[in-house]
Length: 74
Image (tube, rainbow, N blue to C red; front, side):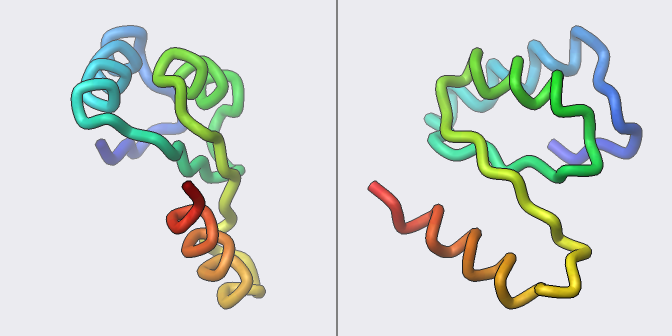
C-alpha cells in the first residue's frame, strides 16, 4: 500500500480501507510526515489502533522498540 505523494485520492482511501478490513488490520502505523487528517479517517474507518512512528528519527532504536512493543500488544 505504498504511497509516494503525501495525500491520497478518495478512491485510494477507499481501497486502503477495504484492503485493511479484509486483512483484519489491528494496528495503523503512521509516519508523522504524512497528512494526519487522512490517517485519522483511515484509522477510524478501519477500527485499528493508530501509532505514530518516525522512521528517520536519530533514536532509531527507540522507534524499533516502539514498533515491536505495539506489535506484541494484545
